[in-house]
Length: 145
Image (cartoon, rainbow, N blue to C red):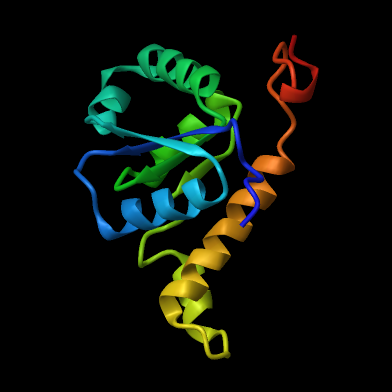
């Protein structure tokens, strides 16, 4: 597959080591040329620490990464990250309970459900990341010196 996401860095936030969902996310993104960094931290604790701490962290994550996948975080916390990070933020996109997994189960064809999930995930990543306007003040890669 062409490396449509070459040069993009994605953050995978969660409070657990590698899971089925994190492995699927990493496989889908790296096949498209992106780099994935697993950030294993107690992000929920940061949300409890206060609004300012979370906002500063979200802003920094948005400067470091082109997109964030959150796994195992409270939806309200993911929404707060989404509003501040300035990059696409996904809420468990690669997890078995996400709507993309249900869609893969319903698709017909000879491909396995795992392959269908991978392709749906890749389509979702491409759509979100290639259609997202750069944060203010950032320079699109094709215009960088």
